Amino acid sequence: IKKLEQALQAGYNEGFRAGRADREDRWRYDYRSAFAYQDANYGYDGRYIAQDEYNHYFREGFQRGYDDGYYGRQKYGKKNDDGGINDEWLIAGGIIAAIIGYELLTD
Image 1: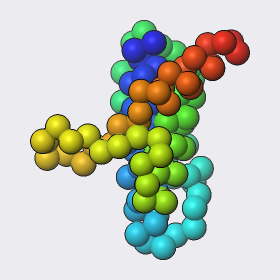
Image 2: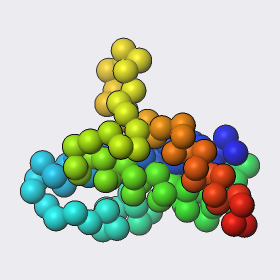
Image 3: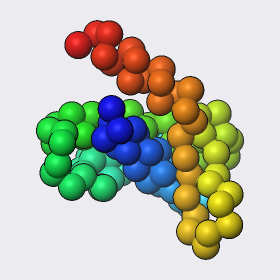
């Protein structure tokens, strides 16, 4: 389950950045056209989880992050305020539990 969470986190973070960039550039809302969404391998290391499963959860996180970034909100997550210099966005734990819990029940 830890790898599923990592996929969701990586997806959310990348999605937030992509959504914010599209909004700032005044592009239309379209998370599916983003390269990171199509590729869905950012952060995948090939261990403990199949690539297609990682891709699925990355895209789940990406879509939610894109929504938040594009609309300038924090509905699904928040900025990581750990004092670091990186611009990192984290999906909320409750959202992770809802996605993973629902996915595990439907498998």
